[in-house]
Length: 215
Image (cartoon, rainbow, N blue to C red; front, top):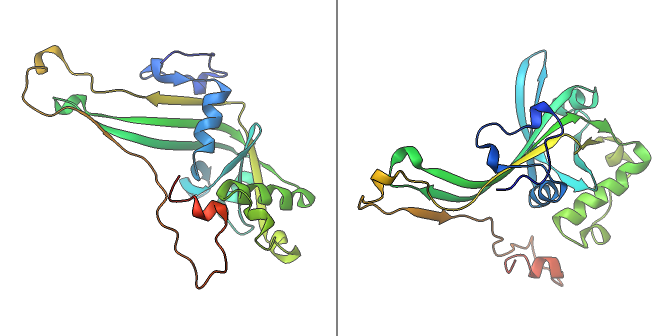
């Protein structure tokens, strides 16, 4: 994999299998946009934690949200450094030797400090989250009322300090193992929508629901 740009900091430099490192904005955005969940690592007075949470991207920021009572959001909103990760598994790579088994994947690591979204901008950012889940949904579902918005924290972190790592292709076997009579190759994996399950009788089916399993 060709590196299109250089890492922006020493901590974003990919060292192990450095040729898999990618630092361009297009790759980073594509990995984030394909994700519904990220993991956020942080420290507080009780130790080190890594918490999964829903995420979405707008321009050059990654957004998260949750209850005002969330420990993670309180720590993140206080200005502490965090590390955000996203991983997509694209296949299991079966080699002729146990040592050379691997996985095909796309991953992103983001370093930085979250900032709080002001109250007057929260509704718009949460509408963007609805659109990430299902295009058109924000125009159909009831928006958050004043009480719900007041109970919700929305944060964003810049994508300025980030790195991606990608593996594709088949196994990399040693020459002495190539003659072994054992199956080798890739078992592809993907995330796919299944048949929607309505919550009771529905008078109509929006396009984003009808297309869910097809996509």
